[in-house]
Each structure stands twice: as structure tokens, then as C-alpha cells.
Amino acid sequence: MPRNRKKRISRHLQMSLPPREAAPGEGPGPEINLIHFTELSFTEKRLSSLEDLPEFFEEGETAWIDITGLNDNALLMDTAERFGIHPLVLEDICNTGQRAKSEDYDNYQYTVLKMVTWDEESMQVEVEQVSMVLFPKVLITFQERPGDLFEPVRQRLRKGKGRLRKEGADYLAYSLLDAIVDGYFLLLEKIGDQVEVLEGELLSAPETGTAARLHELRREMIFLRKAAWPLREAVASLERSGPLSGGTTAVYMRDLYDHVIQVIDGIETIRDILSGMLDIYLSTVSNRMNEIMKVLTVIATIFIPLTFIAGVYGMNFALMPELQWKWGYPAVLAVMAGTALWMLAFFRRKGWL
Image (cartoon, rainbow, N blue to C red):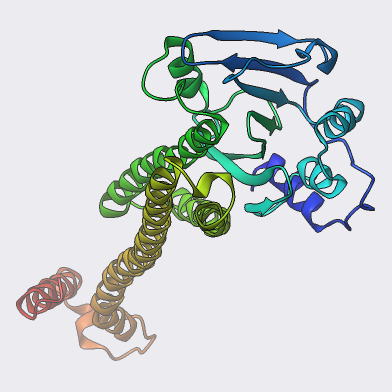
């Protein structure tokens, strides 16, 4: 299991903090990125602190505040105070072992879910918690570390393509959710490639490392399953109630829910394939062992009569006529060779070789 995942699980198992105490998370220093836009304008900049936020946004303007890094407790508390975020929500943001869920508060919608990516170097799944606080005109996202799946959304905002700049914060939140769900599809493709490689190894020459890789992929799929099933519940909750359940965004949320179902189906399919591959591996190893044992058994069986003949003429009796015969030794060797050849022919005729 990856080291960072162990940390997340250990934090998840710890006792919850008091409601008004938010523990700073782990990771690099925080970054605050602000994007605010209308259909005809777009502004993007990095803020040194929340003091640099505009005092007000223009009519029809939507703002996206992206906070990366959860180790600055003062910044998180300041964000909660400025926007009226409940202390329990702030606690969930800081504790990165949360299940995917969505909660509707008086003037905002809080959503937390897992963003998954594939690390090409370690060949493992990387998991990061993403929290979203959606207000009528402002969307605040909290990430554990730099690097995410949101760059295509940012590019669409910069270029003004599609309807993203025409809609409000609710459609922006949907777009980010859709990018995260698409990340699950990309991850399943990567794991599918690994499964194909393992299938080739199983059919050619399975090794001990093949079994270890199989077990590792099965653990990854179990972890993905635990992340995807709560995601289904969270998206269903967003579809039923809250700012994303009404207006033009409702249709897209139904489509997003269908995508989550497809992700879960893909996870279950790969899990079944890996289980079958493990059975194939065990059967292949067992067959190889049977072949080895068959060869050893044939060799031992052939040597049984040869050992008997050698044992007979190895007895120390004085009156053994063959011992005095000139051709006795080569005759015994010929009999032993003939016996071995006859037994090999007999085994082949029976189909045992």
C-alpha cells in the first residue's frame, strides 16, 4: 500500500477533533488562485492572502477560489470566517480521510470527494481529497497538493469556449465534478493496460512477481470501489437537492450520475477479471508443478527395475554363475538399457509422455 495512503487511513481512524478545532492538513504551503469571469471577461491571478480578494464582484460575475495546501490553519480559519463556513465543514475539509458526500447548508452546498490519478513512476493509484463549497456566485475548492484534473476546465474558461463562461457557479461546480469523474475513467484505462500485460504474462510464463502484481492491483481496485460507491451517493444527493438540482445544470447532473454508474460497473468488471486471473495463475502454477512431478515420476519409475537388476548383481553370493561369465557385465547393461527403452515406449504409447 502506498505510503501516502497509509497516512490518510491512519488519519481517518483517529478520533474526531472537537467541532471548533480544525487540524491543519499535510502537504506543501498553500496557494490561492482566483478566477473570476463573465461571459465577456476573464481574470486569473494568484493571491498572496485572502486580503487581496476583491471587496465585491461585478453583476453577473462568477468567482472560483482554488486553495491548494491544507497546512495553514490561519488561512483556513480566515476563509471560514469570511464566507461563513460552518466549523464542522472546516473540520471535514482539514481531515482528508472523508468519504465522498454532499451536504446542503443554508446558503451554500458542501461537497467532498476523492480525485484519483495514475502515477507512471510508481505504477500506483494516487488519491487526493477535494472539497467544494458552492455559493450562489462563488465556488471555493480545497485541494491537498498541487496538480489536479482541472486544467481542461481552466483552459475552457480562458478561451471562452462552450457554455462555461455563460453559466454561473453551479455549472462551474458541475464541470469540476465531471473532470474528477472523467479521471476515474482514465484511471480504469491505465489499470486495464496493466491487466492486459499481466494476462500476457499468465499465458506465457507466470512468475512470483506476477502474483504480487495481481494482489496489488486487486487492492487498488478495492480502494477504488470504496471511493466510487460514496461518490455515487454524493452525486445522487446533488441531483436531488441543492443548487445543482435545478435549472439547466440538472440535466448535466443526471448525465454525471450515469457516468458514475459506468465507473462503478468498470471497477466491478476489472475486479472480476483480476479474480479470474488469480485463479488462472494458480491453475497455471499447479499445472507446471504437475508437469514437473510427472517427469520426475517417470524417471523414478524407469530406475525402479534398473535398481532391482543392479541390486541383484550387487549381492555378495559366491555361487552366481553370471559373475564368472565373460559377457556378463555388458549383457546386464544391455538388459538395463533395453528395459529403460521399453518402458519409455510403453509410457509414450499410453500417452503419459
